[in-house]
Length: 136
Image (cartoon, rainbow, N blue to C red; front, side, top):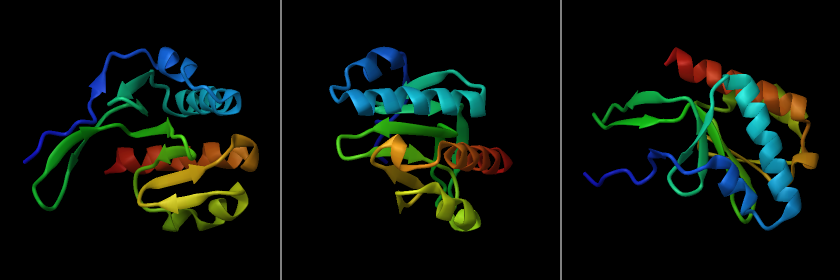
C-alpha cells in the first residue's frame, strides 16, 4: 500500500497563509483559522503542503486500512476555500439551506468567499462535524 503523503508536519501555518496572494482569500483563511480554533480548542497544524488541520483522529476503514487524520480542517485552494468535515452532510440539511452559496463534495464543503456564507451557520456546521468525528 502506498504511503500517505498528507501527514502532519512542522511547517508554519501563518507563513503558509501569508503566502496567499489574493488578499480576500488570505483574510478569509485567517478568519476560518480563528473559527476552527475556537470550535476545536486545538492549535492548527499543517498536513501535507496545503491543508491546515485541527486535532487528530485514528481512522479504521472496513477494508482494514488505518490512518491518522485531522478532525477538521481547510485548504485555501486556488478555485475555492475547501473545508474538510467528517461524516455525512445529510443530518445538516437545514443548516446547509441557511449557509449561503456553497457546494458539497464527499466530506468537503466548498465556498468561494467567506462573505458568501453566514459564518454563524458555518461555525455550527464545524461544531457538529467535530462532535461527529469524536463520537466515531
